[in-house]
Amino acid sequence: MECPVCGRKLPRTDGNGCCDRCGSRLGDDERERDLRDRLNEAESLLRAGMTLRALEITQQVVALKPGYPAAHHVMAMVLYAEGRLEEAIRATRYAHSLDPSSGRIDKYLRFLEARYYESNRRHHTTDHKPPQQPGTQQRSAPPIPPNPPRQMPDFTGWVSSSREASSSGGISWGRS
Image (cartoon, rainbow, N blue to C red; front, side, top):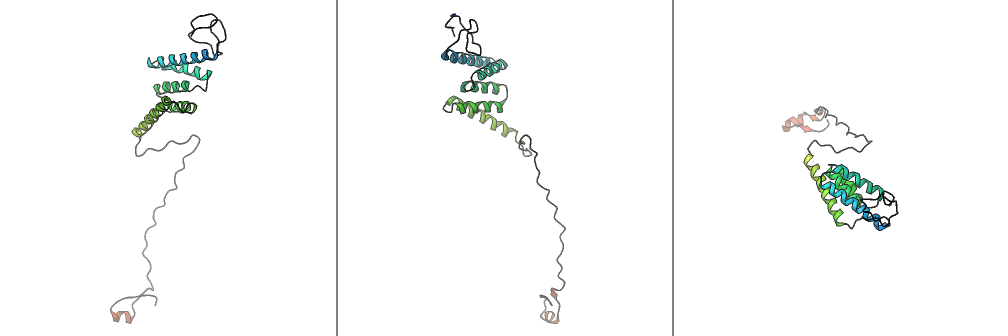
């Protein structure tokens, strides 16, 4: 990028949209180009494995223009490279909310979500407990009381051994 006043090649501008050498104010197109240049630099650093520096640059771009979907998308790529998958998903979802028509952001969001579900499935065991919400206590179900010992019913008075029952050769059921 070149300053329109001093004509010097600018690696970047300060946060106010001014030339960092002569202080002249840059137009919106020039500021947009500067932000894109910074994001391109962050992506280059990411490919070179310099994730901390790339994260620093993307944070600066997000601070300068919070509604810039590409900045959040690059931030997500850096976070994923750092192993911060859940934060990368949040950043990508935010970028997608800013620009839902972006196929690149949508594709990356699907990629990250697949990685998230895959990692959870790999670590899932039968004794796995779902994570608790912060600030809540997990309630356990009340214990189930043991079954009381079985008692035989009392049939006193229900069995009749009268002469009629014994003459018929059986036992008669009913109250006597």
